[in-house]
Image (cartoon, rainbow, N blue to C red; front, side, top):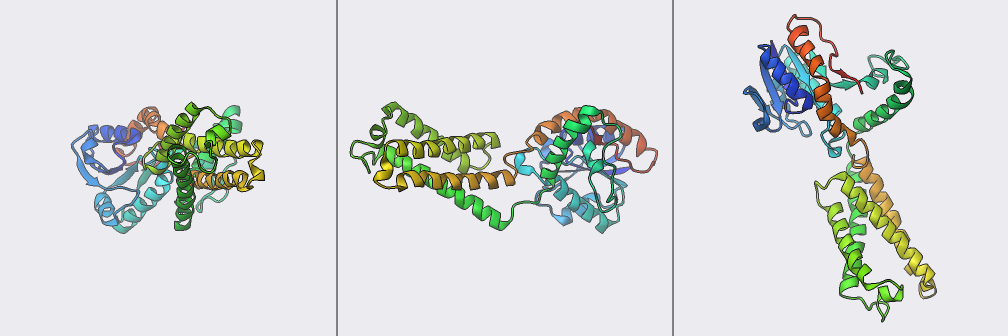
Length: 319
């Protein structure tokens, strides 16, 4: 059979590719980096985060079936599954290909869809813990994957609030190192009763935090540490100035850190909305699912499709 495999270098896609080639099928692999393919097959280069319809149509044209192991490898790719699958289906419609098998998950069978608006309340095979604990957690993660990408307005709010917070931190770094006697002649740390070595530690921590928030590709967990550290710093600054009685000089000594804390909170909200703060387990699950689904993949590639049986969701995953 002529098969087109998407995400053929991922945990599941690699298994499917090996078994499809081993079974003698004619395979086209759609990947971002053909150099990572474990087998010498026809390759079509395409990034489904920004798909080229012409490339996708050339990849699926003439295929007897399309197999997709598409899924997020990191938090920044949240939503790639539904976006990429939609692009694949559009290419199939344009070329008259009708059979597709995609990676799914057990709780997806209980999610309403246009074709099945009233699905069963729970999976019949679920045990007590799966039904009452794990399924709700997994459904929450899957809803995260279905969320659309940030709008232009969301990105503007995110980068504006993040930029303001980082600018404040850079200003405080300069204030520590260059303008230490402003606005207190004895120095800010001496005024607040803090040791000099803490100024060095806090300066280094702020430089690392600003770098973590602004540099692309920094892991989400590290960015969360930066948010948490900046939050403690701003709240502590407000408490320290209030305790020192600086509000009698100017209430802004107390209000400024709190205002910037609110901006930091807004930045963090949009950070999580763009996929940074949750559903990171999808990346870790990719490799594990690849191993767990090897037997299922072999069954539908080597047997089901080979015998010309109707397409089934043989890759329906279990937690």
